[in-house]
Image (tube, rainbow, N blue to C red; front, side):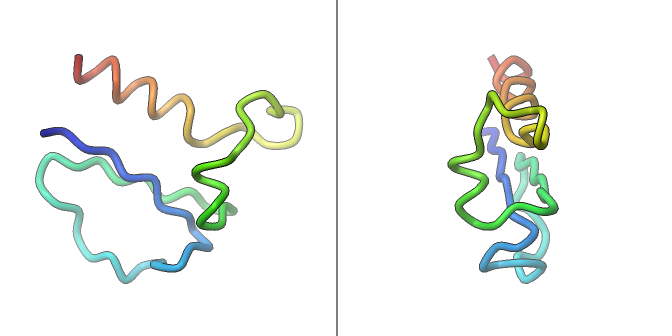
Length: 64
């Protein structure tokens, strides 16, 4: 089953995750903390582009 992981650069896990499992895309989002990945605003791109929405949509469309 395909999987995507969004990892916050300032999260609790950091670089201690090791290699991703098979069939897993892992994206490290610099400048995010562990809650930003879940709660980042999709409509405030004038402040900072959301690093989750586009990769998530691409992942979904690529795995239909």
